[in-house]
Amino acid sequence: MRSGASPAFRSLRESRPVSIVDVLEQAGLVATEKVRRVRNCRRGQGALDEEWSWLERYRRMWTARFDAPGKVVEELKRKETDDGRKQ
Image: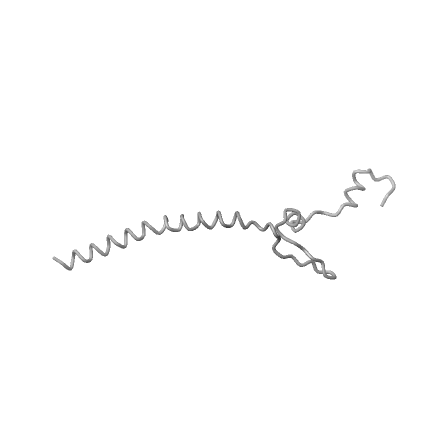
């Protein structure tokens, strides 16, 4: 490196860039282990279990709500067919 480089430039060149894996590891979402040249990742201890449960509850609720109109239409069609047979 040139001796005339500014201190800010030198610190940028010497620092290691932060990867998304580093951020996830700092948040406790993943745990990493370096084996030779490979960095293995696995789910961390704080891996969003509570958030996933919350999302799952709402997914079930919205699925039921979106399915309800279709069930009503099918019931109306069935009644209409049944009424046509009775006449």
